[in-house]
Image 1 (cartoon, rainbow, N blue to C red):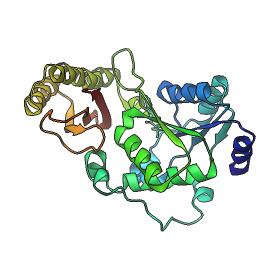
Image 2 (image 1 turned 120 degrees about the vertical axis):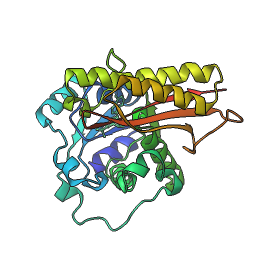
Image 3 (image 1 turned 180 degrees about the horizontal axis):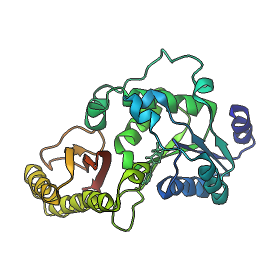
Length: 274
Ligand code: AMP
């Protein structure tokens, strides 16, 4: 794979990489369309990376439907699919680790210890195995996107990281392979996550203080019921540090994590303020 992509690049053809863990839905396919539109060749990787799971149970229960994934990618016009076995990808458990400092100690990193270290290792390795001009990541996983962008900058990977808008159901629910585990009613409840974030947006546009917005939106979620909030955080859209005032703030992210029917869901709202 490495040789094919290097040769493509040498011959002047651009390569786009879309890393995924499979169980593909239209959210993944929107990354694929972006890559197809911007590059001569698109490679999709499907690899459930054991390093980024802090709970063995989550890794074992991760949904997988390779046949359906391959059909979707073929229909979309993807050129190559890279789907290594874990035993081949990691001949031995890596001893090298990647740490993102304070940026991985907040939000998802706080609740999923070791998760981003595992993401950093797999993405670095994919960048080496599949030399690409562009790599596509969903803004639904905002922290992941920002950390990868930072890693590429810090370590000088010759690839441009591109963030793709979150694809949603008509109800506003962010598409996710985890939604498969929700009942119809659970999906309705989960769609309120986006509703709450849009409510936060209305308040932000009116300049309401963040602590008051947090209270109002928290109340909204409480009234929905059956929605357990893990966090609702107002952070700088660049550094992910918590914000308490609009002063000097150019990008704001409101990040949500919580549980519906025992399924952990995340979503966010990203706003440019100036
Ligand atoms: P995953 O297979 O869950 O690791 O996701 C692979 C890529 O697809 C990541 O960059 C995700 O951020 C992205 N992704 C997942 N869901 C969506 C969505 N609803 N809209 C856009 N991108 C998504």
